Image 1 (cartoon, rainbow, N blue to C red):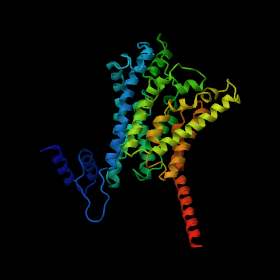
Image 2: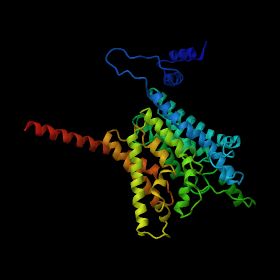
Image 3: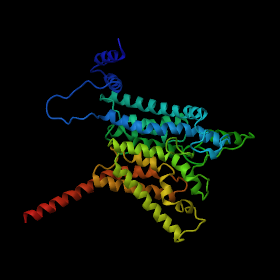
Image 4: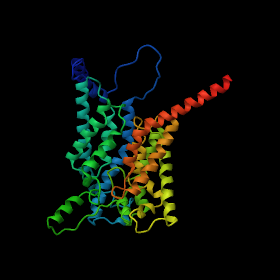
Length: 407
């Protein structure tokens, strides 16, 4: 008896019981559902929620694999065992040692994210007697990509539990939440454990451990893992080139560093019509607009070079698109179809404000120079309001046209 027939028998055996949603979820995840519609007129399409989620995951896989390589690369680079001049195409990057370090550190993050999140999803499905939804498939992949590589697993487990329960299930589950669950998880981590989400030690594997050894009196060299944003917030130039930023050879969250792979993932989502190009493009335009305003402030000498805001204000507007989590947030977070605006005009407004506010927070909050998380969460809250006024505006225009025709 094969696995498929065994699962089918279990599905039939537990049909109508509390455990039915769990067996149905496993069966549906592994195989196509065998239910078909009957009667009436239906839209014929090959896509469903599971296929949509899997498409987004495929767009994320390159970021995950590169994040594993980069985790090992940044570790050995900080130890002085790699020549930074070799760059992305050098033999020192594409080594098995780099990948092994990354696999050892990143894979547990993925396992904990999926393990805790799906366990809670199954629990709520059994308790509430509804089908297990596939919404967490993407969230479970996003979470490990937006945290520092050395995030303690127990912290991640607590944050995932909070994000799934408070950010999703209390609203009714997939399709009902008003906040992006992955960003809710990261926001919880940031505010509950700020020392593990910011600073110059958390972005490179081994930096925190080395700092603790030095504090205990060990005679070892410190490992600095400061991000570009952290350096600019302190008016420091860390020496990274534009190509380092574009390829992703910089410290940062696991999957957020490579603008190249994020761009390719975004094009893939646009091609498959899953990600909104309007939100992506308008977010970029909003970021450029805010960046140009800050550059103008610097050009007009309206701010002193000693100001704590000067470093990020003086950053060329286009470089804001390459550093931090802006690109990743714009492509994979802001375009979440549940929490983003639904109307066409609303998407333009929503995306523009995400980009505009991201750079504003980035500059005016040097203690936390990464503003895309807070910007997206803020606009998640206002997305229904934006759509409401867009719809009202359209209704008024139609009523006005109707009035003109009848007079």
